[in-house]
Length: 258
Image (cartoon, rainbow, N blue to C red; front, side, top):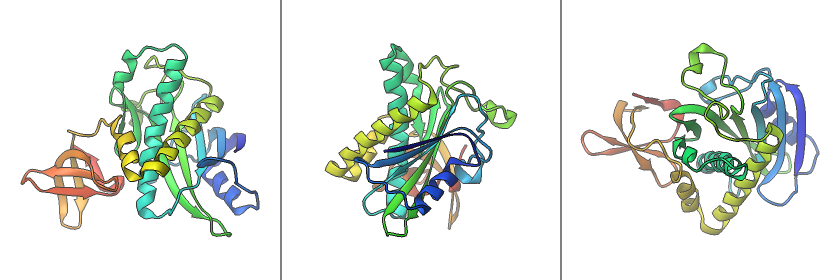
């Protein structure tokens, strides 16, 4: 596995694209082929076209390059769910390995599709992009940001955010924390290879804090309000409407929490 570490970059996702455009071979065992880690990003990207605050504060800013069988729009959502589960798993594993309490884990979870939260405040997020190399091999770039030591400085999002340190979660430096994520992802990917999509959904449901929340989804038929009712067969968010029907939401950009 290739590990590239930078002090400052424009975006680790851009660095990942440059690596894929190069002639460097990515042939290590497991799904994770490369990690690009930065101490600071000048233009980190988040979901829905938002920026991800990435000052040089000791937080985790990285992109992980993985291979996945039959990468397409549908499987990209499964990769995103699995990445969310792997992020929460890795936070949990590090915390316990360093002597942290099991009690704290009750407050840790993931909101659909892959926002990592503690006490309902965002501590991490992931972004997935698909790429095809010139040789035809398919890769997914998973951008991962975890607030290890400090929440965002932006007052617009600070109230809804937190960091592991503030929530008394034990962690390692970013360079080690991302390796724990890679281990967790590889383990869950092996389970996917054995058991298919259901293993991904099962891994995500372990940390689900979305079910039971009220959301409004923008659909072709207009806005539809409902209660999150678990996952659809391909990782969609199922919304139970007031009339008893359900609608499957496929993109987070069409969803808002009430």
